[in-house]
Structure formats: C-alpha cells, structure tokens
Length: 175
Image (cartoon, rainbow, N blue to C red):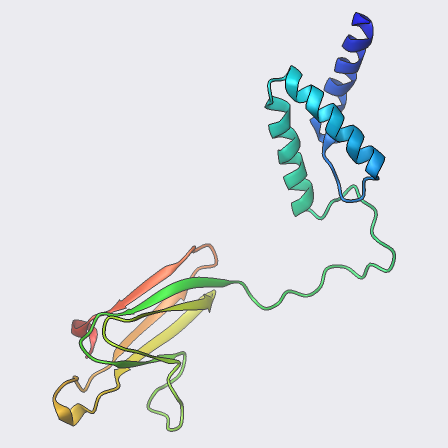
C-alpha cells in the first residue's frame, strides 16, 4: 500500500501540477478526476500545489487553451472591436461653463463641442493611445465680463501602458 501511494506521488511529481489544470475541452470524467486528484494533492502539499495549478490554468487561458483541439469550423479569433482605450477624467475647476473639443479646431464653423462642462463638473473620457489635442473655450458670452476671451489648449500623449489620466482645467490656464 505504501509503495502504491509513493508511486502515485512520484507520478504526480514527475508529471507536474500542470497536468491537473482543468481545460474546457476536458470530458466530464476527466474533469472530475482532475478535481479529485487536486483535492488530495492539495491536502498533501497544504494547498501549495493549487497555486501552481491555478497559475497554469491562467497561462493556458491567456494563450487560448493551447492543448485543446480547435473546434470544427473554427475561423480564428474575431477582429478586435477597435483599439484599446485609456480611461481618464476631465475636470472643470473654473467659475464658468466651458465647451470641450477633442482633436479638432474649435474656430471652424459648425463643429459642436465634444461635451460641455459646468463649473466644478467632471466628465469621464476614454482615449486611444497616441497624441491628442484638447481645447476648452468658455461657453458664456465674452462681452458679459464673466469669462476670459482666451482658451485652454493642451497637447497630451496617451501611452498604452497608462492606467488612467486626469486633466484639471483651471482659470489660470485660459490664455
């Protein structure tokens, strides 16, 4: 009996924990056998083996389950739904309402602003990696004396590795 247990432990050690990773192409019997073996192996190794098995499952899932055969009629991965975007926040820290334009010249007639920010308001914006030009102009009439005649203008570079960005438009930046 001791030899059988030692032999099973040696076979598992030689095959590695990766062989116990559950794959979507596993049959029900194979999947149940792997879970049972993982249970007893987890008891023997005090749960350390489970970390290795889960890591292997994560790697296989990110690589497209490399050990599973392709389904019949498989055409490959679908094209991406556009480029990855970096989320960010635009904050209006001024005392007036502003019109915000993205990658356009606001002086060209009939181009509406991307959005309007009221005083103290913020808006989320997701940008594709690369250079962007953000222009903000006061929405209030300049003759009323409430808003300056200038505009906020900033060139930003979004790096695909960035997790987020934040632009706060203050009164001093309107020139």
